[in-house]
Structure formats: C-alpha cells, structure tokens
Image (cartoon, rainbow, N blue to C red; front, side):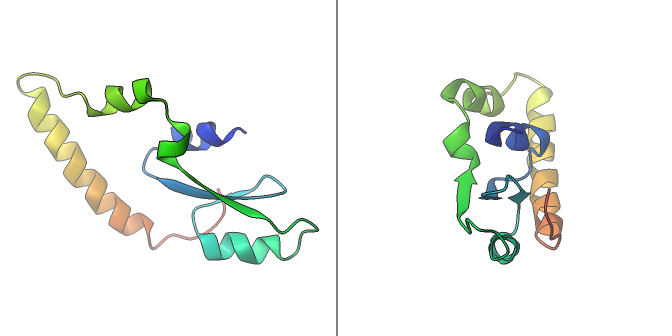
Amino acid sequence: MKQNQYFENYPKVNVFHFTSDGYAFENGEQANEHAKSLEDNTVKTVTRAEVETPKEESKKTSAKKGSDNLKLVQTKEEVGNQESADTKKEGAI
C-alpha cells in the first residue's frame, strides 16, 4: 500500500512510521523495535502534510454555509476526543 493510502484509510492519524519491510506504525517506538529485527533497520516518519496535495487539504478545510458549519464544529470536537483515545492505542496498521 502506498503511504498516502494509509492516510486515506486512517483519516484521524497524522503521522505514520514506515519500516523498510513495508509495515506502517502509528507508534514510533514500536516501529523502531520492529526495525531492529530487519537487515535494513531504517524507519521513515511521514506526516499527512507531506503526502496530501493542496487540493485535498482545501477540500477538508473549506466550510459550507448554514447548518453545515455547526456540523463541522461538532466533528472537530469529536475528532479531538477521538485523537485522545487513539493515543492510547498501539500497534501496526
């Protein structure tokens, strides 16, 4: 799977750590531990901003008129709550 596909499949994750064998981790420490078992122990950290195009970013940040703005605010609050919960999760994707 290409790096940008991970970000598309996991919209709440902003950083992935990729090992040389193609595994993706949310947790950098786990990626480093896994990489120790590989011949090439390189771990590449990639952020969402590095893989998204400006067009994709503008789609996400453009607000709609009327009641849709309220929905957008609620969604951001929900995302904030979910990100807190997600930081407790560990493991490869």
